[in-house]
Structures are given as C-alpha cells and as structure tokens.
Image (cartoon, rainbow, N blue to C red):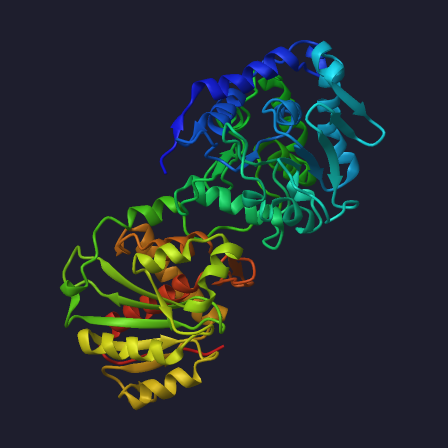
Length: 536
C-alpha cells in the first residue's frame, strides 16, 4: 500500500504545538513553542505520511540527535498532543526511560506545557507526585514508566515516548511497551495507529544492548539495506570512520539547532575544553556528534559495497566455468551460506559472486518476527532456499553442492571444521576429496580456520578487491545485509577476524565470501598447487 503526504494532518499537529505548548526552559521559557525546521520535518513525515485509509505510515520513529538540540521539549509536546489531539478514547501515553529521574525530564516538559496553557490546564488534571496527567473527557492518561519500576500487566499503549534508550539496563521495558502494539488497537474512525518514538543520544558501544539493536536497524533502513516502511529513522550522527570530528561543518550538520537554541561558539568552547583530555574528548564526540563511545569499526563501508553491485545475475553465463566455493554452516536453526567465486577470465574482469542461502522452513515466520528481517520476502524472491523441517537439512545442502558441481567446475570447497563432519562425509560419497598432501585438482575440500592467522590474510585480500571495486556481488540483498552486520576483532599483530558476538545479526554469507575469495586468490597465484592453511 503506497503512502502519500497529507498536509492537513501534519498541520494539525504543528498547530496544536504552536497554539497550546510553550518552551519550558532557557531564555524562551514561557514563550509559545516555535518549531525549528528539523522538528517540522519530523512532524511532516511522522504525522503527514498516510495510507489511503488515513492511517499513519510510520509506527516507529527513531531519533538520534546530540544533546541540547531540543529533543526533550519536542517529545513533551508530542506526548501532550497524543494524549488529547487525536480524540482517542482510553488513550494510554507512556513516557519511558531507564530510571524515574530521566523519565521525569520529558514528563516535566509535558506537565509545564499543560499548566501554562489555559485550555489544557482546564481540561487535564496534572498529578506531578504520580507523574501522571489525566484527561477525564476521554478516560485517557499520560504516565511515566522506568526500567526500575513498572508493571508488565495491563498496558495497552496508544503512544510511547522512550528517552535515552542507550541507558536502559536491559530490553525488558522496551519489549513490554512495543511487543504487539501494532495489533492491540485497530485505530479509531480517522485511522490512527499506535506510535512509538525513541529520542536518544549515542551510548557506549554494546552490540548486546537494545539501543545498539534499534540504532543499527535505523541505519540499515536509512541506507536501504532493509526495507521497513513502518520505521522512520532520523539520524543526526557522525560516522567515526569517515567524518573528521574536528571539522566545524560536521558540527553544524549533526546539530540542526545551531543558531537557534545555541550558537557555534558553544560547541567551540566544548571542543577547546575537551580536545586535550581523553575522557572529555570521548564525551564531546558522543554527546555533540553522536559517535558511540568505544565504537568498533564496521568492516565494509556501505559506499564500497554498493559500488560492487552493478550487474544483473544470469547463472547460465557461468555454466562450465571454474569457481571456488566456501560453506559456512550455521547452528541447527539459523542461516547457512554457500558462496561460489568465479575468478576473472581476462584483464579488467571482476571476481563474480554467486550466493546460496538456506534456512529451515518451519522457523522462518518466527524468525521474521523476532529478528525483524524479511526472510520470507527473500525466500519468495529466490535469495534464500527454505529447507524442510525446523533444523538445517544438511542433505539439502549436500545436494545443492552436488548440483553446482555438475554445472560449474568447482576446484575447492573451503569449510570451517565446526559442525561439518556430516556434510564432509556426504560430499566424499559424491566424489569430493578431503584435502591431503599431494591431492590437488577439482572438488577438493579445504579446512579453513576461523582464527586470526587464517582469517586475517583472507580479510585483507577481500578488502583490497572491494576497495578497488573488482568484485561483482549482483546486489544480493541477503549478502548486502550480512555485509552491513560485520564488526571485527584485532590481535596484537593487527590481524583481524569477524567477531560473531559483536557483529549485529547474521554474517554467514560474508564469512563464506572471505573464505572463497581467499582460496580463489591463492590458487590463481599458485596454479593447482594448494598451499596449506593453518587450522586454528
């Protein structure tokens, strides 16, 4: 269903804020709320983009913006609007944060706005001691919740405002407030949908945190790695691997309230104080530029990956051609990847990547819901093969390799020895040979360690090929998603390896790509003589 922009719906929200809400702090305290351009843009998208039935397109909005840009007051104004502005009967509006003090900051803005407006103060009852605002006319309320004190029972949110999600100690409150909210309310006569807004600054790098999970989802939606039409990412963030934190143009780009709420001299003063003090410098980057503290490097830059996907795949063009394969076997219920690399045949040609992905059919619907990844779409489009049952069907994968060996000239199959015994045995029965001294030629199975010594050189080879744009991956969306998830570890010798614990979501396709690419490069340089690989 295609969305359209309804100016009247967006103006309804903006007019409520301008007419009924006031600034609550600083030199403008007590004055009517003046929406800044970036705030108007958010409201236009969030409330103005609607489907034909009038319902809002966006259910989730993730806003990451540096401190002191006015996000708290904007959140307070939107919360007041959601309490009464849409005439929802029994509306439950929650302002949530890691602790009661933090949650109270957004509530304070909402509360003061109500008390300082004649119409709002007559209609609404403010209970500051309970951090609750009640609309008796519609039996609705606004309530503060915190991770340290909330009940799991009886919540039916109409709107949720989550503040500083990076500070949440776990994902419990987030899950309670967001699970199933798309279905709990059907919307009223004019087609309203529940709304979840997250407003935060950057946190400390932690791939297990709910903040990092949601942030990465927002980045992937922004970069069109994942298609999520219900999710609106608003990201005023610097890229620690591309942007120069000393650049004043960067400061201006990620701080949209400069020259409105504060001026450049404010940031210059913070910069001068922080630049020579390591701890202060970390905080300057985090709070002024939204660079996560102790951030890990995302290994594959998005722009380089996009530059290596320019062609359409036609497998028939590769029948009979030499290739090198690698298999990354998953756990029993996850994604498994098989990657084939076809080396260049002439000067100027590229390494061509053919991917096979496998997932147990019975788990796909659940994984779509829990991982928030469109596995079902990728199955329908042919990018993932749904194997029978609820666990990985190794016979299915063996048969795929046998079929590929009949179509292409597979020189090698590289594999991680973990959980591979059954597959190796099956391939041996089909005529593949396990690597031994003096055994070269076609269909050789090569053990490929996952430690620094094996993966380090392999990743550097793939890096060189990617950066010189000599790879063609045919825009496979599953591989693209895997590429965006890879984070790395380094040892003391600066060797690297993918870290599956730090990496967000699945990276199986990239692990297989690393192995297949390296074996291709090694064998191209050494003829048919196979060098040994240390197994770690």
